[in-house]
Length: 334
Image (cartoon, rainbow, N blue to C red; front, side, top):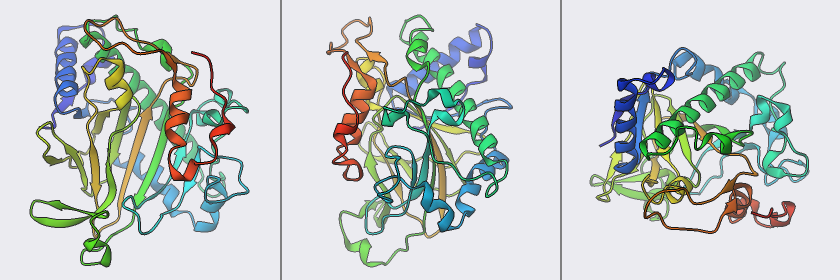
């Protein structure tokens, strides 16, 4: 089903235990495409205190969040890719949140002429004292975990463990904080087939419609309230309950393609609850300039090399909140 894997050995020197962990990770990646990992260490960040600190963002009054909004929701704001987005009622995906880029760690990762590397609008220190430093620590911990997982995947594929590391230097990973408001059963939306699904004989509202992540590796910390489901290879939907001290890991469509289908990108969705739900996904991504070319894997389908930032921008500007912005980022030669 959804395996639970202790990955502490990935941060240690080469050992038989690490090889066993690699095998467990590859088995999960090839089967369900989902796993829950523990053993993150003291700096792993998957603990209640760290989570509560990050989620302090949602204690801000609306007048403090609105200036951080993406241009879609505040036309005078310069930021189009990073920043705050409010709840959009009446949609299958019903959530508010903020997307935070790696400039939180290092302002040098910004690039003025590339919206994928724009500055992240952040709350004022006076509004959330200490929050920026806590968020930066968590971002760094998730980058370290993502790098360890990619090294494990490389070893599992029979490639040098450093195969993926150069691609993720100066990466454009995203830390996202999410709040799903309560959605009550029996509401008018329950009768809308676009907004609800059948789950074990019961009609349930959606809070996030079924999708496959577009990128590489997603690290998700949940906050006590269930709702996440993964679609297993037989087509059934399986609950992925919160695991204190653990992170849910799933793999994206680009990693599936890059590895010739050896890694599985799994559809997943969020069912609504009568309780408020929070989650903290981290999308581990390479540099915008990274050139993605076929790996030396036997029988893997060949494809034309492409620049990751071009792929990401093309995918993003198909969504309604970004339509019309296509020309803001010129393509780069692969």
